[in-house]
Length: 279
Image (tube, rainbow, N blue to C red; front, side, top):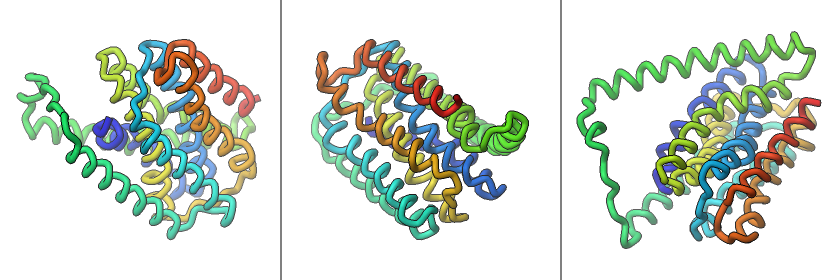
């Protein structure tokens, strides 16, 4: 769960970070914010829904005691910043980054101090990978992310102009799904391998990273204005709503378990959101 909330989440949130930074620098704030909000909705409705359909997920008590409240707290704080200032300022971006660092420090310290942790077995093939090969793959992946994000932002703006819709609609649907593909891949593979805690931790952590790291870093570089009223009145309400709905779903039988029918409900929730935004 800790690895999913930190290392995996940071890696799978990299596309959102680069796309949002590129969008802000290219004067497309609707894409910068819509990408994150749409991706967070997709992570729970689309990715968690599909993952639960593949393999039901057990929910541990830490989810309610720490991870879920933190995700909801960051979501509420984002709404407050957007509502009061009609933008995410540099100071607010720094607040997000600072809070994220405190959360990660507490999470890692708490994990190190817990008893009964058994080190996971390391794949022998992974043990044989050289540092040179790791650096080469990181370099190739970094280049792919950079140029891919630049092409994605340009393509999204052109597509919005061609279809006659706002950048917000494209960002919160197509771009959000595109940047959520790493979360979907990581979660589905984890579910197939039986690493169900990693699946849930990855998605909750990714949502936290998307708000605190992606919007925090983007706003620190360049303040993000909120130009579309629908972001506050519709999109943010859906994002907070899909996060809140996880609580009652967890206590409906079977308790502490995201079963297949609950996965279908989350997936239907996401399809409803896409239909209302697009049509």
